[in-house]
Length: 358
Image: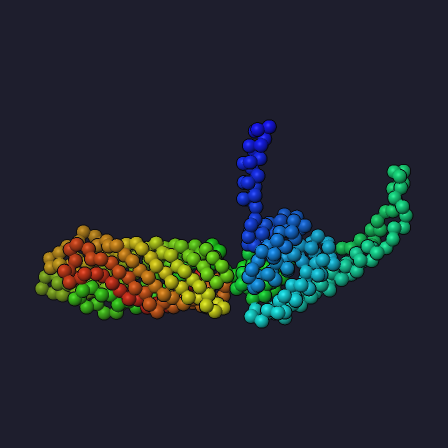
């Protein structure tokens, strides 16, 4: 008995902890049950998610999926009811109203379900024609010709969590979807960089940057991306070779662990801030003014590096983004052997580019 009680003490709290507790978790549970064909459980999960959902822009998606689940379960009247509730809720959405095409798709569902709903209502009101027998009599048999049939239109499986970025709540195929990135975000930019190196004058140079990250959605507007970033800035200089002067190019290459915060300030437009910490590699500097007179470097000079950037992202499509970085600042303390006037190696960058997310 004590073993049973101990097992109950350990297992019951674990099961309670493992169950869905948020609107998002109930939505995912509903999607899983729908996929498995457990439509009654899907209805229950979507209803629980709807009750917990505080974001008005997401609530319509729950109603739509409840209707889809009832439709698959052949409960035509309840499916009609929740389709109409979905349309009613979207009708009051002045920010992201339902498109005419999507509205017609839902109205077609309601229309196709009408004969089934009427037949079910009629059968429910009909009195029994005979009494149930005592076992010798099989009683009334169902009329196969009057059984309601599943509507012929395909129903899309709900996938993912509904997002505020979704304008309608349904795609043209009436499938609830998410348009926020969920697995990877990458961007490549190019522009100009002004490098500051003590008394050494460095003209504005071309610069290139790349960022890749894993997005973590905090809410409908705020996303955090954790990943890595790198920059490349060629730095041309003149060096003495015997009695002549030749042109050469050093390279500033950074590699940092990057954290980005993106906040949607307007539909499709987001403000982004990145901060990265890592290393800066200054290569091919022998013979340049960046080293003390007569100084030599065995390979690249490696320095601690910090970089911060402010950007604006515009989503051309759910997957492709145009990004502009009007200001990025980087800092590295000088390496031993560098020119004495260099108390810090810094740069200010400005870039534009493209990004891809999925």
